[in-house]
Image (cartoon, rainbow, N blue to C red; front, side, top):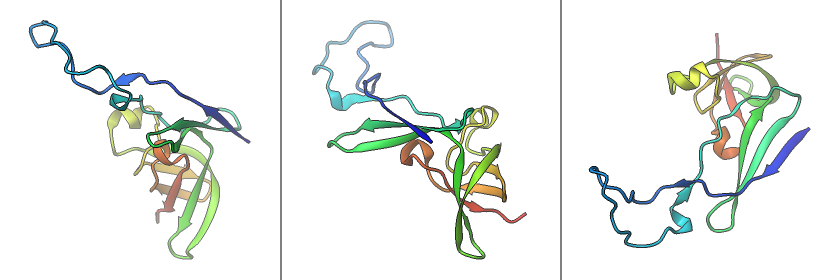
Length: 139
């Protein structure tokens, strides 16, 4: 079972800051536009329940982006047999991207997961793709 939530809202402004170093307020060249807004990252972790959690966002141009919040399974490619299996994630072993991501057990690209069939290197971007793909690592 997969829970899918539609999310909207603009929360992060990525335009020019209207304050100088000394605290004086600059006059704006233009008003705030929707194109200058962004969003906070969705940090993918192992789901505590028995459901995967995904969020759907509308992006620029009317497209949609699916972000994975809680993961249970990973699609694993075995490089020797060229076979793909969907296996359960048991835990996050290591995340070499950042020590804070490693400490919080957040799943990003290049994270190493412990699964039912062995160690897996994540090759997809769960916060961008909405799915976790990986390659089986020889031990």
